[in-house]
Length: 220
Length: 211
Image (tube, rainbow over all chains, first blue to last red; front, side, top):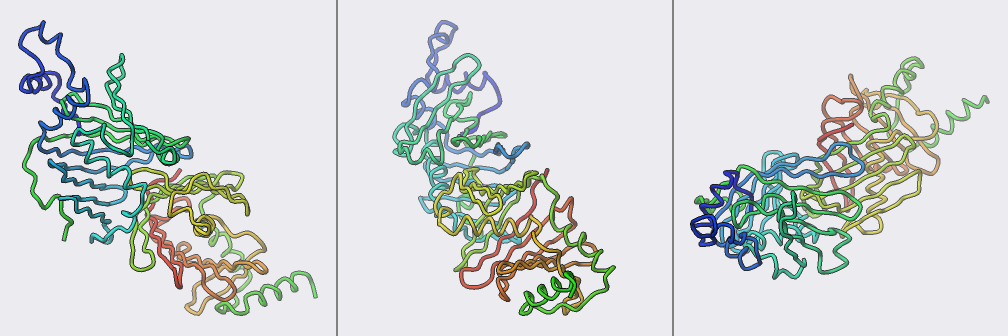
């Protein structure tokens, strides 16, 4: 999901491996970006076996002059293992392995089960993440996705709008800014009608590393 | 009987079923009032808290809380999921409650008024007549505000600063708030709110930021 920060060389190297471009400038000019369509996005995402990254979540609100900043880490292992951990100011953890999902909260040094995992609002956001990490933005029933190409300084992004109008009362839209590395997203923004934005930016991304099973299981 | 005497008698009757307070000397009583009011940040203010909730049946929850009081006394309270999604957004001026957003299960009829009462008890000074000042059984100085037919609020002082706020409906404790750590402009690093009884709960509010 997060972007790779090694720049254009890495993008070109990976794209070459993926057969997206040929050698030489004329071929390079003709090459379609990895996000040309849904199929190419899914193909690019499939080339990544795992991702680990840090993230910073910045929540802006009308009543606050300073945004509310949360920090955490995420891990993803194909096909659908996920760890999403907030380290501050709350310490919460979501782990999903083979479809077995646990939400926990750290309290007084121990992890306890989180009843709010039953909340629909949370399921909406986190339930979609595994699908997105798999490069699948178009088949979800919760959101309608449109692909927006690079426009001037605005990078290519995917815009997701709730399919159910009732859901727009909670989330009006989500944008996923695509990363330089094929199959990755560098940031996402969650918009709420009349109430600011949640921006999540990824950093220190590590790809295709072996991640132990325990990372996707609830801590004991 | 002078008016001040009538008022004192009335307040004593109103507190008849509350924990008894031993009298204190007038100078000590006068000095206690501003110390009790130091439990509350002076408006206008804005604050964010990380909230750990212990709910009935052993459930736990984690939320982000955003509260603000403007110079006109309007209290604004928001609850956010850790992921940033707004779950509740409401404000209250006096008794006029406005709900801008309430996502299930925070849309239950009594939730908004209970939340505002919780937040108000912890962050807004009690209104009404001057408090009765006295000593609790353990020797702590207590300021007690009573409203006829309404809620009674008392603030318990420790040596340096307030350490607890309690509210009562009649003689029954309806809410206990414990203030922990060294306060900064009326904001405590940790505030623990307990609502006793069936359906009771506990909220631990860790201060993240204030302005």
